[in-house]
Amino acid sequence: MQRITVTGHENDKIRAMGSRSAAPLPTQLQADDAVREHLERILTSPTFQQGDRLKRFLKFIVLEAVAGRRHELKEYVIGVQVFDKEDTFDPRTDPIVRVEARRLRAKLVRYYREEGRADQTVIVLPKRGYAPAFKQRDAPVLIKRSVAAALVSRNTVAVLPFADHSADRGLGYFCRGLREEIVHHLARFPSLRILASDEPRVTGDRTDAAMIISGSVRQSGERLRVTAQLVDGATGCYIWSESVDSTVGDVFPAQERVAEAVATRIEPELGDHRRGSASRRPNENLAAHNLYLQGRYYLNQRTDEGLRKALDFFEKALVEDAQYAAAHAGLSDAYGLLAHYGVFGPAEVWTKAAASAAAAVMLDADSAEAHTSLAHVKSTQDWDWAGAEREFERAISLDPRCATSHHWYAMSCLSPLGRLDEALDEMIVAQALDPVSSIVARDLAVIHFYRRDFETALEQCDHTIELNPHFAPAYWILGVIQEQRKDFDESAAAFQRAVHLSPQTPRMHGALGRTFALSGRRKQALDVLRKLEAYARERYVSPLEFAWIQFALEETDLGFRWMQKALEDRSFDLISIKVDPRFDPLKDDRRFRAIASQMGVVSPAT
Image (cartoon, rainbow, N blue to C red; front, side, top):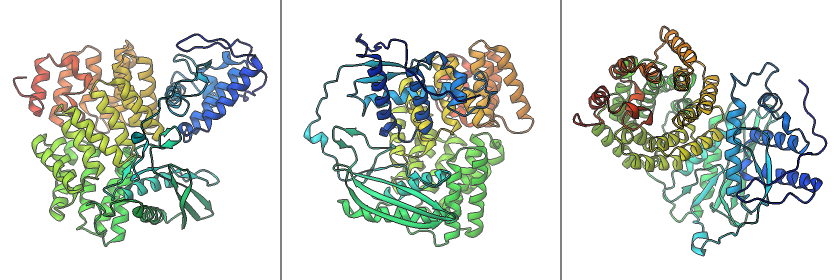
């Protein structure tokens, strides 16, 4: 299919579409020029800084509309022209355009709420279409903040994504890891606030960050040059810049050197120069430490392949140093997550996860990571909620800046017990400590979903997808939220995207099957059930996946039989039985109360 060229001008009269009616733009030519100028302002804004695909999407539909071809802005055309799909692209089976359109709408809302709040021209993308509308609005009255509110603490820093200036733009993984390493090093300073966003918020002529860290990575052959800069948030002036040379094969040491250089430069700017309790003497066995870091990297991806690789790296670290407590903790976490994500059956890994966590605590009783791993075992495997809480509290007291401790305390202890306000507080802390974590961002959306705050949950989904567009779990929770809102088309589109990104994960297929059942597409739901049965002959599939579909098909007795099997298996997703809105229609059934009581999340009399 040939590319559509952009020529001519829009023939349709552009009218305002805001809360109040507005007159058309002065002349058609001036209107077109104003829209193009406004488009360029949006594309170069901080809100769209990292969204290359969304920028391409917005530019294409706006210029096509201005050129008079808004009637050609169909899902198929956009898929081929913007997202480089083949001519065989079928929007019915690949929902990429619908998913990205929703993200684009959210981005535009964010832009006009922040840096574009004074713009006269506004671009609106209708919810059920792809042809943008343009309107004018009166300049808003900007309310000045008080002088006290405008003052920014000198201890607030924003770490921006590093730019990939390699020829093939193939160093994205290095740039993301570099940013994570800088955040990790800066988290050692107890008095430093690290903003959990891709860029500082701009208000008037100020930002919410006193210091801004940015930089770039260049490549020449096997050589890498990393340049980091520190910018004063109030004046926009460079404070410091430094470059580090490395090689492609020297990833982790290079990232650590840059992060240490940034931390060393920032330390004098802080009023409190003491580092927090998380700063300990590094493991003397550098090989074991590097293998451990690689294991944590793959663990955070939350994919089947990533979890298997994480397990392998932790085992290799223990070959290098059998007494390395952090590696034992990592091994426990890997085994646990392999069960939670259905890669292994729970019975295969229970003993291994528990033994590894116990070994970690025995080797280093002052390790926050070790106590977090043990707490996670107690909550997700033993349903020992009181014991889990004691271990989580111990971990946080040892290292208040361990993001995983706060994260798992929220998700596997506080949430199952229905303490959602506390869980939200812990998740906010976790995201502040690890603002580039996809799974932390996703689980913050999950907490909002449990709180029935669906709109906030959707906004957090958009943030997560923006952070990592290829993170399948983010599309899974997006689909679950839309399903609860009874927007089954959007829900199916999100689940189909999750299936596309993670085709071998039963959870994604099961979720799609449930949406098919709820929307009356019984045949498709039964097809998914057969697919899950085929998967179950080759690998573990949580009984809860079958239960969800059977409940949606109104086969309640069969659904409870599967749910009882999930209880026997101690399936991970069952721990949300008290708070997940999907369970609400079942709560008056005595069988539901019996299962929740056996798990210890409700009293037998409830």
